[in-house]
Image (cartoon, rainbow over all chains, first blue to last red; front, side, top):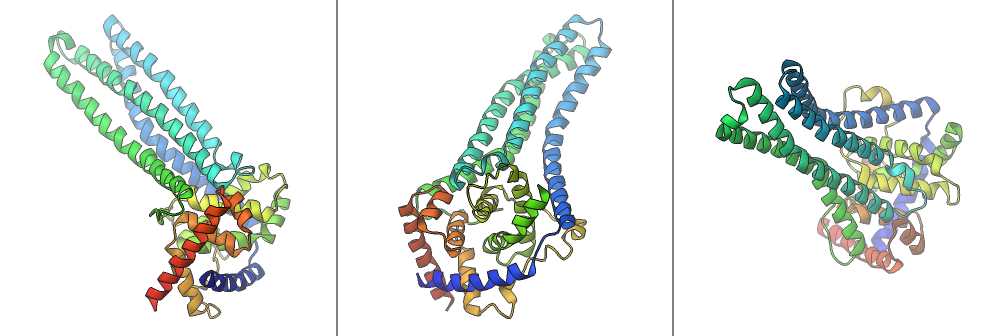
Length: 217
Length: 163
């Protein structure tokens, strides 16, 4: 193993130089921890802002419809149905995200191999993604339908049932727009990372095949 | 606990430097980010360190895991320089007087390896036995052996192409 032995020699030399010149003191250590913790928190907040923008629009519509149409039973029922459909899913999604986030590397690393940790990470991420897809699959059409029902109930004479064609078009439009947004979000936050991790795991299994995953970004 | 962690950490700081170096030999910004990320993950994981393995082995696992899966390229922010003053100027031997051209060529060849192969190489360079590499990585001993032969050939080929 000549190239690796050459590398080992230069490696050991470098190691000596590094160890002799670097150390971490308490103050700089705390600065680093704080900086990375903030960065991590910002990433989570960034993810949730995107998800919450949609939720805020939805709940604002429900509140607006509720206070504007206190006497209209049909709209109140639609608002109630919207709340009943969304609140449990939002709560469950937040809870699962929190669990997944907290059960990150720190809880599992000690007793397991690197491959086992990667598998665990993959399992957690894919379980969360499965639940999210399930929630999105139900909530997107339900919310689009309720939103259309409320909008037509408030702003048109006769409500949705008198304007079925335009209502259907609006419903399809909302569903499509939200569907594309969710698809893009899932692609960036789940499908791509999961695919990369799957490739990594595949590489662990198959030493004889070259798998091109050299880029970590 | 913090004092104890820092004591262990400073004794084994080279582990983090080496991982950063092997994953990002010529990208100092990513190296700094990875360095911070490993430090953070190690601190978060430290309560789970039971001492049944050497701290350096444990730190290697954390570091390689972070480098392979958890590390994503992070956009650098303008205020980062305050935190990184001095401390995070991780030695970059790519242009140092001590680093030979041959060593640099080798590092360039290592750069092209996949993340998993880089992890195996870094453990090999640390004199871990095939058995220990297999255990740390979670693969069979024969898998380690096959990979190291393949890596050697790959590096040799790269060097040949460079010449």
